[in-house]
Image (cartoon, rainbow, N blue to C red; front, side, top):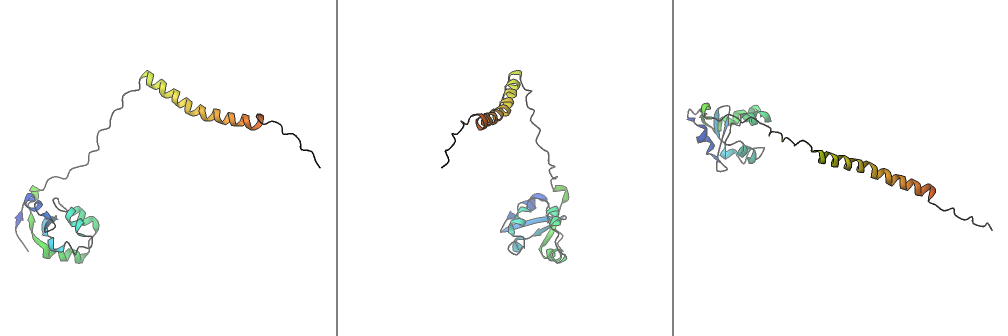
Length: 143
């Protein structure tokens, strides 16, 4: 087992396909040779560089044999005091909409009223044409 202690900055420099190191449970693994063999594809491992990939690794639920195979890629440990804190998600501040002005609210009310009245007027006109707009058709003479 390797006893080399590396800083996060040193490990983060190894973030390419030809030189790929990852951090899992405070240990540093050189997975460059494993990239093509990884069942999830090389992109998964490339996304695990430049950060502590422990959560990503555990979320997948690797088998015991996968955990055993990791030993051959171990190159050392990371100085955990050099790992940057995980950024916590902060939703963007909500935009405060300006209070509606008197002219704007009146205009908005009128628009709502028209959106309601226009379909009613169309239906009323269609009803009128249906029952009152037809001329009585002349009776056809019977032969």
